[in-house]
Image (cartoon, rainbow, N blue to C red; front, top):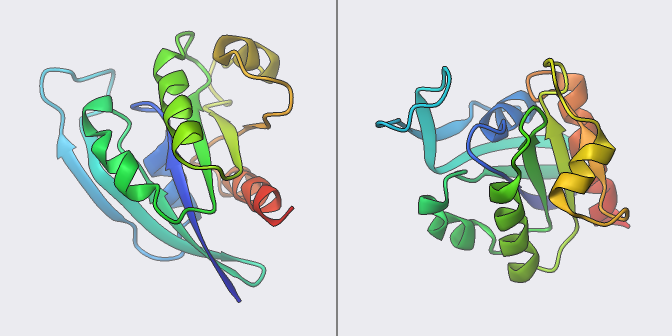
Length: 170
């Protein structure tokens, strides 16, 4: 049996908490607080420390750590990045501005030398971008894997987890 620590990171409201909840075999530990004046759409809470879940895949026990998406909590990115085997950058596929995702990706690439993938969430919503448009907006090379997903769907979320574990195992 092998243990893996995986970070799920990305901008505010990209679906990190939902992915952790969908994948976890245990009740997720959430550290959310009510949003202040920055309320966006129907979201009323935000992760301020982390979300923690655990699951298993094949003979692996996987610890899932969802990071806060707001840059004012970036000190947690540093803390959570210790001893990770890989990370997933969640993005909201319906957005057209990926500047926050670029900053988060740059932070983790510079901080840790581990495999990572991009999870293009909210593919079930109108206006969701395809992988090629996401690649262009993120300005990333073709060798970086983008996995389309719906974080609330267990099958879709499992594909994201399988992909990052494949990257870690290779």
